[in-house]
Image 1 (spheres, rainbow, N blue to C red):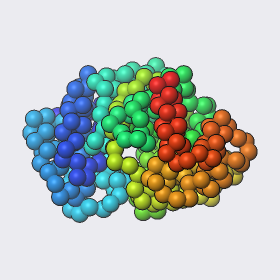
Image 2 (image 1 turned 90 degrees about the horizontal axis):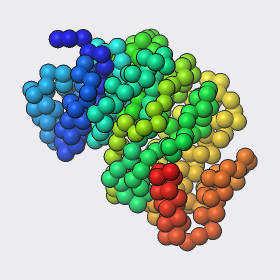
Image 3 (image 1 turned 90 degrees about the vertical axis):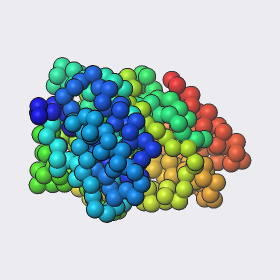
Length: 319
């Protein structure tokens, strides 16, 4: 088999309904030299069967089966990474989609910029009230240089758009072992991708493509109490970087942002406590335009606050 130029890492759990479409979006890539490694994290539905059928049709697709569900996407990704052979490593979740020129366009840019990792804009689709469709980044947005401070205090990078040089990932992996790249600490569940991006940004600046090369499926149905665990994980990750020497003021700003995001999640979930949390997070200087807008929401009835937030986010994603 020809050596793949890019390895696509896809963790999957209970993804029978979406993983076939996800793999189709990889198979439609204009770049032919790829391999896709799907790590099925102990699914009890037909996820593995869908992947096996796709692998029978296309030898570039491989299935790795974990014997039991770990509940940690990091472990499934690491299991797939252990099998990766490509010079470049790209990431995709089992319910998201790529545009046909995603790999080719990013690798073309990387050859010209000589960057060692890259990401692109992302298009949200299919979401509910808290997730209007549209672009993640405004069309005029560009990453700061250096990127680490903005990444720690900002919104993060869409992992499904990320591609990185294998050698760079090995540099930042524990003991330079690619199969240990993602931190599988349960306290960091759901933020292991943010952790990876922060580690990348500490050692290399990225290339950014403003075109949306990927589509993120924002699931409808509202926000559950899983938001509590995700919020704790985000604060735990910030604490990790404070301990290893990140600027304390940057970490404070990052914590305020995560508190405001959690407050919005509580608002859309119809849960109490969002007003006080949002006011406290948004009134610490420096106060941005976003902070002022969110603080103003606390004076409104919850239905109106939700409507205005959604309208503002819709406008931003269409900017």
